[in-house]
Every structure is written in C-alpha cells, then in structure tokens.
Length: 420
Ligand SMILES: [Zn+2]
Image 1 (tube, helix red, strand yellow):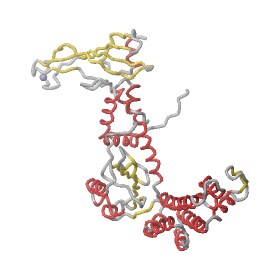
Image 2 (spheres, rainbow, N blue to C red; image 1 turned 120 degrees about the vertical axis):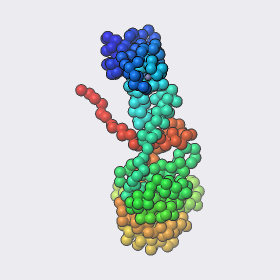
Image 3 (cartoon, helix red, strand yellow; image 1 turned 135 degrees about the vertical axis):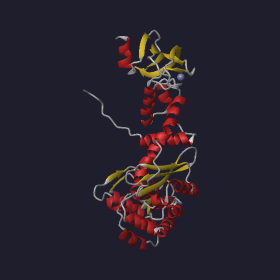
Image 4 (tube, protein in one colour; image 1 turned 90 degrees about the vertical axis):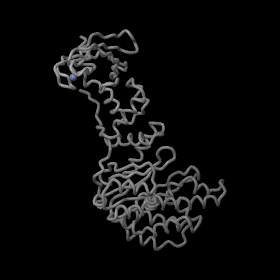
C-alpha cells in the first residue's frame, strides 16, 4: 500500500495539504506516521498584505483513531509562516486537528459515539488512546450543544425524582407525550424548582402546561399551583397502585409475625406473598399446583382463601385493597368511589392509605379522566441509573448532568450488522 493510500483510506485524512513522508511500523505497540502540512500562502490572514514568507516548521503529535487496536501517532510537521508587513507568525491550519490540540477531530467524534452508547470514561480513554481528562473535556464541550431549549413547555409534564450524586435526590421533568427531557435539577427543593421555572419561562409559556403528573407523596403541589396556574394536577397511577398494595403487604407481614415460624399458617403467609398481591380475579381457580412449603396441592385461589381465613381484618383488608387497586388500574372513578365507601374493618395500614386517597381525591379524579402516567419516567430513571453505574458514581453534578443530556438528546440510531 502506498503511503498516501494509507493516509487517505485507512486514516481517512482528506486534507490534500497533508503529505505522508514515511510510515514507521517497527514498534509493535504503536504505529508512527510522519507527514507534512503545507500550502502556498500569499496574503496574510491578519493584515491582508501579500508579504508572507515561509518561516520554519513546527512538529506536533496528533493522536489518530487506532487501527486494529493499535494506536496511531501522526507526527505532523506544520509549516509556519511570517508576515513581513505586520511581523506576525502563524501555523498552517487543517480540519484534521484544531490549533493547540493533539487529539484529532475524528477521535473526538469517536469519543462522542461511545459516550452515547453509555461507555465509561476510562473505557473510552483506554480504547482511543487518550486520557480520561480528554474524554471529560469532550463531555464539557457537548454541554452547550445538548442544552435543552428553554423557550417552550409541553402540554403535559411528568415530575419525579431520582437518586443522583452522593445521597442527594434530584428532580426530573419530562414531556408526557414525547418523553423528551425537560429539565433535571440537582436537588428537589421546592424553592429551587420554582426558581428554575420562573427564571426560564414566561407566564405565557407556563400557561401552556395543561397537566402535570406527580407522585403525590412528593410535596410539589404548592409549587405547581403557583408556577403553573392553568395546569391540572394528576396523581400518578403507578404510585397510587403501589400505595394500596404496600398497605396490604404490610398487613400480611404483621399477621405473619403472630405465628411462630414453624407453623403452617406462617408458611402460607410467608412464601406466597406474591400471590396475595395478585388481583383476585387473576388467580388460578381450577388447576392445582404443588406448594413445596406446604407439601400439598392447591389452586392459587384455595391457597389465598386459606390465608384469608386466618384473620377477618386481613380478609377485609385484602378485598378492599384489591377493589381500590383494580379501580385505579382500570381508571374507573365510579368503582373507586364505591370501594372507598366500603372500607370498614380494614387494617390500620390500609386505613392510612385510604385517608391519603381521600385527601387527594381530586388528583385521583384527574388521573381517571386522563391516560397519562409517570410510566415513561421509569424508563428514563432506569437509564440514569445505568449512566451512574457505568461511571462508578459522579462527584461532579455538571458532568453527570451533561452526560445525561448527551445520552438523551444525541440520537443514537441502532444499526443492524452489515452483512453484504
Ligand atoms: Zn500581516
């Protein structure tokens, strides 16, 4: 292969002003390519006078993308020029590498591609023969490019929180329809959430927001009423269901501890806890199955009934909790109200949940009338968790935030293997 072919085809150097002079493959660890960058220059780029003369050269070591995992160092001899008129000196320029930089632009592009794919900084640095600091510098350079446009707000917002740097909880908002990131804030304090939206959006823009989905355990309601006066607050379906099932589960555990651990009653309640959380109508009623811990055959329904027989309060709690949860799941407000009217003799845990439901009934009614939920946020949060795991924790919030934006805003097209 001729030297210039290697430069053009393998290294993909398209600048015609770069001429390869020799290739040194003697080192098994790296390959060194010697090249020269020069072109005729008549007029001075600073003063415009046709007084430019050649003025020596300047050697730089450019790190190119590795070929077959072997690092490539391009020893580039850059022509220097001097203007006789204004006495300035300057180097020849190329799109291959920015002035005062030793990492080629191609390498930087490859860093970005790997960042989108959630690879760790040290991993990328290792593969592309650059330092982790250089990778972090690319992350910083993407910070403004991936900034979220601050001039419009979507009709539907979903608010949630996630565990971020250290033990801090951070605030996140996404568009309920497109699932695009709207904002991520380092903490979830009401005053900071308020400050963010008031500082970045006009009242007219904030009035565009028609509904906001929240987990109503979070204390966002007062901020929402103040900042988004036109928005309806919708309780998140998933959290409501969780609350009901959690109360039922706590009731089961409490009852279980009334029995000693070597009893059959204990085993019924202990080992088949998942079945108690399953909707009664979904239980298998005909086919018996072998229950190892009880050494007997039952249908799922039979097993549940055996558990419910143990205590009348548990029984009432079970049926009430499931009636509420089923109504929430099917977004049937009428059924939910009916279930709320038959809540006597339930456990204290479920009573607390019911009190909370009653207190926020208007938010639940809004939820029943809409199709939105914070479900899409679960996916977003999972991805953020993944980003955190790849990086082994971020101490620096702004790096972490930029990394989140890189992975969410720069589109990563999935490609199938190219076979032909
Ligand atoms: Zn000049």
